[in-house]
Amino acid sequence: MNRRRFIHQGGLVSLGLLAGTSTLRAFQFNGFSKETINIGVIGTGGRGIGQTSLINKIENLEVVAVCDILPFRLKEGLKATNNTAKTYTKYNDLINDKNVDAVLIATPFSEHYKMAMDALNAGKHVYCEKTMAKGLVESENLVSKVSTTNLIFQAGHQYHSSRLYTHVVGMLKEDVIGNIKSFECRWYRKGDWRKPIPEAKYEKNVNWRMYREFSGGLTAELSSHQIDFVNWVLDENPKKIMGTGGVNFWNDGRETFDNTHLIFEYPSGVKAQFKCLTSNIPGGYQIKVIGDKGVITLTTNKAWINYYKKPEKVKYADVDGVSGATVPKDYNDEKGTPINVVHSNPSEQALIDFKESIFNNKQPISNVETGANTAKAVQLAIDAMLTGKVQYW
Image (cartoon, rainbow, N blue to C red):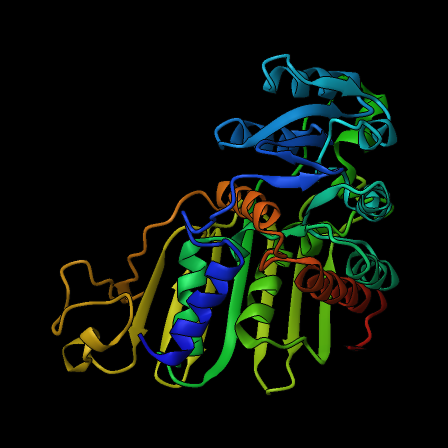
């Protein structure tokens, strides 16, 4: 293990981010020592219910309260807790519940800021789903607020918690593919991205992603994960952002774009492309990190490394996560050799990291500052597309 890898993993241990590293099984809340973190889930749509189901499997975490303004969503949220949680229709009532230690915010993008700020003011730890906040000033305000508290704040970019992604980032920082030159990121979402509604009056409540008042569209909901990854790898924020988009596939009254095309330029000179589509085009999710010696390709749960030289000439034994001096049997002509790392569901791992951060009183690696940098990049990208003008950090 070289020095950089040692420091990297040592930092993870200090943050309680490697499985089994936490030595504390209790945390202090309102002057009392507790062994179980009681969570209130604000927003019981698909994401909120999905996160509740994962929390049910994690030791020392329990959903004790759920909140939603839609009665049918609230009913589903309660059911996900086996009908054991308190229910609220007003989020401030949940936040003020003295039995709630932490909140998970899984509401429309436009609501994140005020809910997170109110939760912090009430002394609650916060797990805020991506994108963290809508607006540049709002993102900065959250950073400032968290800095004045002893509370844990985790931004819900779950790939930041993926042990596969963490491993790949470590490899990239060790220059295993040489100097990074560019990133090519895509996310093709098949279909129209719409959800069925029980009644017409619930259109904007359910399909809020289609309306600019509530949503940052594809950039905030999908590409933000990949923007977060690029910022993480480079340890930089983009200095220049260009973009375009439109409603070209689904002429159904939506306001947010159904296709987006972005180019980021970083201070180091590295360029990153982010393309997001909703249609029936094949392709799915992919990140390609292009170096001057090779390429690393990632999907949501797999990764490969491919060098420009023929495989038999590459000393794979010297590359972390890759073995074999000749062409491996699982070598892929397009993507190269798999990077095999034991890892679990990133969303579940992110919740475990949140728990460990509270127990160890350490901010997670996907924290308010990394979340704010991604949120600001998202906002500038949206501004670039809407104005047709280059945006600068």
